[in-house]
Length: 333
Ligand SMILES: Cc1ncc(COP(=O)(O)O)c(C=O)c1O
Image 1 (cartoon, rainbow, N blue to C red):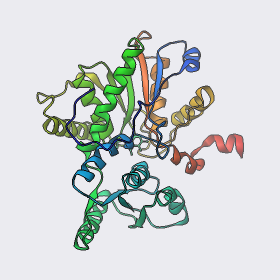
Image 2: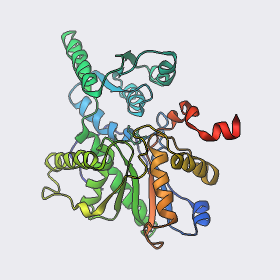
Image 3: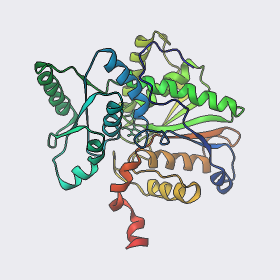
Image 4: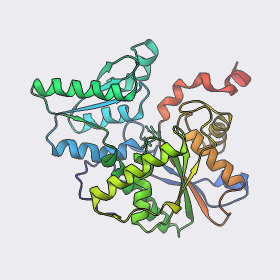
């Protein structure tokens, strides 16, 4: 375990399952294929942001906050998980969507209300304007005597995956160390930067493979580097920097960009569903697992070096992705 001084509001008592992909191993003719099931958590259908929320809420409670504010699209996993975790921590919660209130967006956001959050629709706007709107709402709450905490600091959020790296390293050791390569989505940065930092603190038990699902390589690299520097100054660990030779970028599954489906992602969804009963969604996990499948089949790590994909969750989105499936028209009409 890596000692972190930050307050942590414990949401996860047990490690998430590390599952061997035995059927896929047989189909691809190689062993040592695993998935780390961060979609299998006991709260709100799970997902990566729950690990970050342990530290975001730890900070909020330490500051004496009484209401959590969070922003994202109507389908946002971070919003859903914040609504659930805030309710558990007995904090009120307001969810801000940079979207119009339409029947579709209200359906996607419905679980936030189930968890008791107030949902506010800001209309279509970019993330900078959305953040300004949330700041404005926080000021208004303060004037009214409330103590709001805006959830989402990338450095604090990354601490969750510093812990996750240690958790996976321990599980791997328990199995005799079959895993050398870990695959995860490359997106806004906290999840992957936290994992890279934890991996470095542990002495690089893993090679980390980032499958970009949102940005070009330079921007993804910049985001990660910024969070890694922030983690070093925040924790006092690795102040000499992280050895970047243990991280690799995979850009060939981004397709037309963030949230845009690709044929390989759809094929990965169907393959994992039909071999292992594991569900993926188009935005984050399907592209990551498509890269994992490609490299497990050919041109990737040598067969004696095991591979593990981190399933970061996000499954509720799948229920609104029906129209993205070419398979739907081919097979279901
Ligand atoms: C399911 C899922 N996976 C991966 C990510 C990417 O995480 P990060 O923003 O920390 O890069 C997200 C972000 O919301 C997500 O919801």
